[in-house]
Image 1 (cartoon, rainbow, N blue to C red):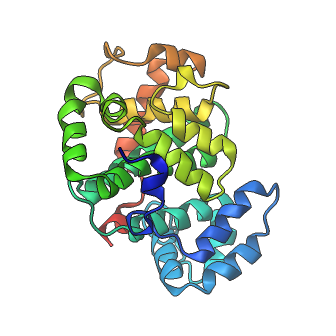
Image 2 (image 1 turned 60 degrees about the horizontal axis):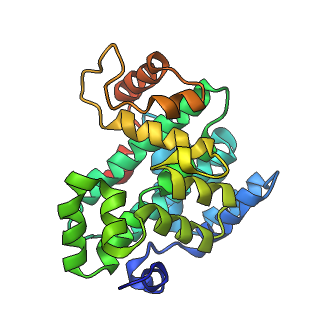
Length: 274
């Protein structure tokens, strides 16, 4: 039976993160990172720079005057937004194909969840960029499982998923979940422990010790992202009321977030199409 470490020891099955992005990840642990130093390092990677500028000038993030340099993008958008843009660029470009997963659809879902989680955090009066980062990483373990596990195990997980749920299907089949695997990868990349904790518990946040607001917000964002196009006036029967109550959010507020998200989009369409 493969272990988590068996999968993480196969670099060909992991997202390939450029060195400049690894350095950028370290700034999450710094209270006041040097914005211009970050921009200077990013400017030395032409692929990342081109993708970042493409995103920064897209309709969702751009403004009347085009951003021409990474330094300008960093100053205008701020450290947190640029960091998340670069991480998104790196992740979407690092894995080209995954058996059994439509990557364009997968990343569209991830970005929807990330933007929803950010909006929910903003309802609480927070910036929301850190929960956005956590949400960007929340489903990475699923890609690694599909790449690294034997096809028969992946098929068994897929067969069990409609009846047991994804995490339970994985637990039954391999003894760990995609969330635990993703959290361990985040640890190896030296993300802050709070990020790793949120990734590990986003599918069952009420069991997290200590409680993680980021995990709860990602959980709510996932629940919102899978609702039908026409959102009901009242909360659906399967709405996670207890999780929402724990972070002080009511259905009406969450519903408005989802409506705004569907109207404005997540802003990463250009990156997914790249």
